[in-house]
View 1 (cartoon, one colour):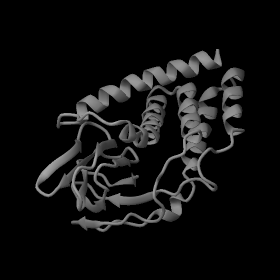
View 2 (cartoon, rainbow, N blue to C red; view 1 turned 135 degrees about the horizontal axis):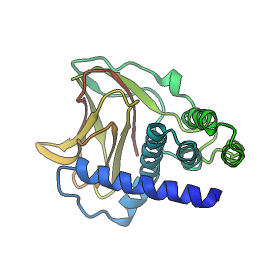
View 3 (cartoon, rainbow, N blue to C red; view 1 turned 135 degrees about the vertical axis):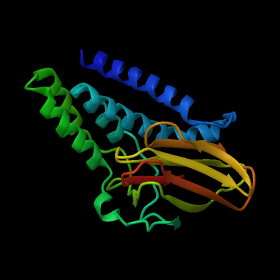
View 4 (cartoon, one colour; view 1 turned 90 degrees about the vertical axis):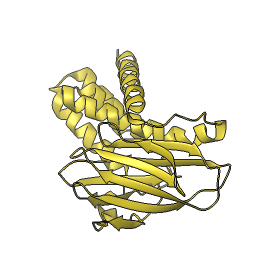
Length: 232
C-alpha cells in the first residue's frame, strides 16, 4: 500500500510538473544532450519534490507531503554555497544564507505537516517514520543553498559563466508568496525562459558561447518572495 501510494504520488506530480513546464517555457525547447540531461536531473527531482509538496498542502494530503520529503532527502542537490551573488536591479538581495544552512530542513517541515495531517493513521505514520530514519544522501552536512528576498515587481540579475559545450542549469524555488519568472540571456539573445504560473522554475541548456550569461529573476506579484537560487 505504501509503495503504491508513493508511486501514484510521483506519477501525479510528474504530470503536473510536465504540464507546468509546457506552460512556462515560451521559447522552443532545444534538444538536450545526455550530459545536460544528467546535470539537470537532480534539479528536476528538486522541482518535482517542490510541486509535490505544494499539491499535498493544497489537498491536505499527508502521503503527498511525505513523498515530497522522501524525494528531497534522497537526492543530492548541487547548490552552490553562500549567499546569492549578482547585481540586483531596483532592490537589495537580502542574505538569508543563515536560515538555509541545511537544505533537508525543508523536508523535515513537510514531514511535520504530513504528521499533523495523518490524524493518527498508522500507515501514514509508519511511512513518515521510515523517511525520518533515512540518511541524507547529499554531501556531508547537506548542500548549502543561496537565498534572497525579492520585493514585488522587482528583479535580481546574476552574471553567470558557463563553459561552452557543457551543461548549464539554473533553478529557482520561491516560498509560494508570489509568482517568479526566470530569463537567461547571452549578449542580445534569449537562451531560456520560464515565465508560467508559480515560483518553481528550471532552465536547462547546453552552453554554446563563452562569456557571461545574464540570469534575471523577476517577481511578477505584489508580495515579497524569498527564493532559493542554484546553478550547476
